[in-house]
Length: 264
Image 1 (cartoon, one colour):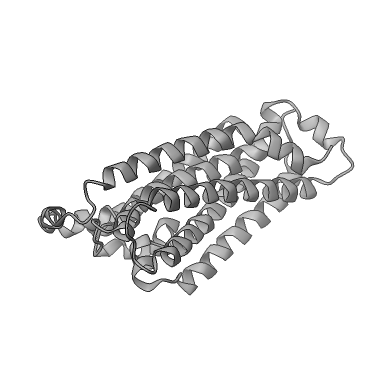
Image 2: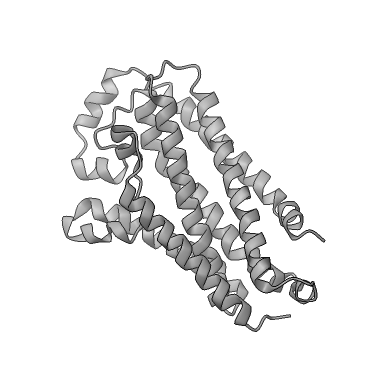
């Protein structure tokens, strides 16, 4: 049996459900945007909102009456949703063999645990990319009716690339946690809890400069949409840091999981 094909098929249902939910949410967002589009009254309302609140909502320095500004503001939902999908996928793609009592079958196959990990990770990367691609396509299609800035396509590319990197980070974290946690039922809970803690830290950082050192700890601060819109690039230091986190987590998974006693 081809492990890669098996993983793609077994995760197809969740992929379709997540894709459908994301499509519906984006359509609802862009329907709401029709009330914001080129509406000067919305700018006046935002001028009265405290700066800290704007920063917490990723609305600092963005004009939400434009397509780019609105997508930049709404991007936090994309960051969170796609990260949750990937972290849950990462935490379950190894643990589900214990949950479904198929671990013994995999262990009898003429392949090492290390190879199983690599193949499963590869399948998870492809699945995460597909969800990312669905999100990108939906945003592009739902904004076609509006006049956009010339660099909107470039902004969308960099933003979705940043989200994909974030997905890879949380995918790797999820797999590492599933390798560390002996009780497979808890790996998903730990993974999603860690993600939400990191997100709330990123929100708290907007209210206090004393928390600025957390910018290297929470991935949600690595590639903020507002900064991408301003610079049309991804920060090199954070790209390197992202790579290190991914490599560390995957190396940890390759070291820990093969030595673990599985519940079969």
